[in-house]
Length: 124
Image (cartoon, one colour):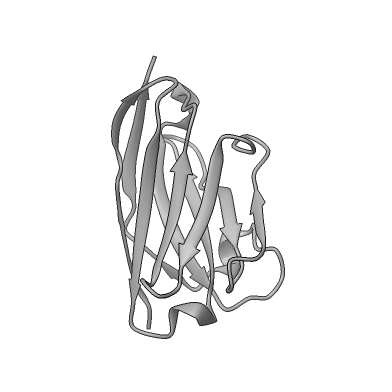
């Protein structure tokens, strides 16, 4: 079992920045690729970003490319999502997830463990 706890969400004005953190516990963090997803009210959960076990590979949804950066610190068992130039359409609950998969992981069903989510609200 892997337990994931997100933090760092909040209310920010459009154009602002937030950094989300996801702390993992339970099993060896570096054995898992990590991802961030989000879900806005009335919409399906969507992929945001993913990072490989070592942190050497990342992949982003087109909607956040160039604005968001995913990173990880395996010594701290933590994955981050730096979000810059935030837009109202970025408003959602953001979830981190852990996967034992090996390929680029954009589908939610490829992830084995999920956090409880953290709310991000961007005002216009």
